[in-house]
Length: 180
Image (cartoon, rainbow, N blue to C red):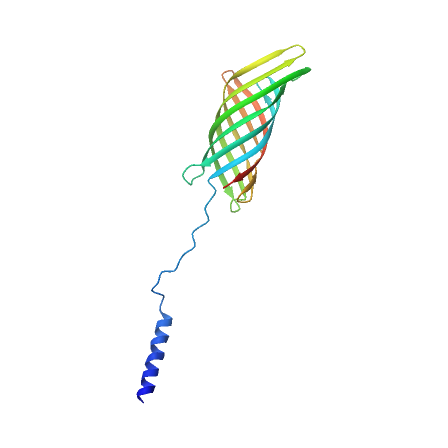
């Protein structure tokens, strides 16, 4: 009888212990770290400072404090030419920095990007009837898409530029970005 009592007590204690939550803390998985930096290579086609341009871009940026704002810097270099005349040679160089904001949907697969940059631009070309050399500061608002996976993104966009004389630039951009 004593053995049956001991076994019943052990069985009841085990059943009660199995029904109670664990006293040890369980590890919760940490959420995936959102990317905080990016590097992208791209191109631009458009017009700036009285010339048609075709250029390549290198851009890098980083997120500010896990929010929607990013700070970035970009260098664009390429060829420039007159709009309605034979051009012998020409070049464009633009250095810029600015802020952008991203709003995303579909778990970050598709985002809309908007931003504004402060830039220094230099455009020069030699043509049949003209020799143009322009340089100066610009403010460049821009908008585009940011589409892709967590790491690899495609970024088409459009931008306009304003200098001390008013509207001065229109560019269509496309880039491939890697973010980490």
